[in-house]
Amino acid sequence: MNITSISVSYVFLVILIINLLCFLYFKFLFVSSSKENKKHDTIVGNMKDPDSWRKTNNRMSYTSLFWSLISLILFIYTKFFLNSMLINIFIPFAYIFIIIISFLVLSRKK
Figure (cartoon, helix red, strand yellow):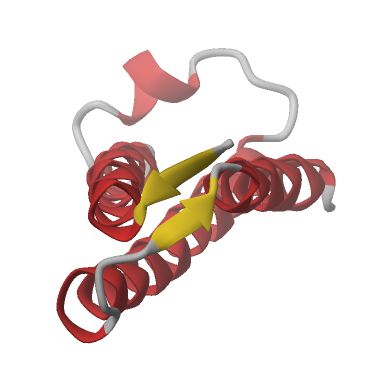
């Protein structure tokens, strides 16, 4: 099954937006849980290891930013530099699968 390269470019745009939102979310958690912040006690609460939780959130935010940049590059390439052609629908799903695997691996890393 094939889709046009223009459609694939918009898939990359949606992935870009989702990853940017994830970046903002994880960065907000990281900044809000710092000891200098007023919301520190409400966010951290009675966690056993808040420092590793903060490191994980920071790592996830930069992972989201990385995939946002890759998605932006792929969007620009497929939208403006690739001639209109048919692309296998497997490619966007494989890309999403790689992103999910990277999030799972990096979220488990200590």
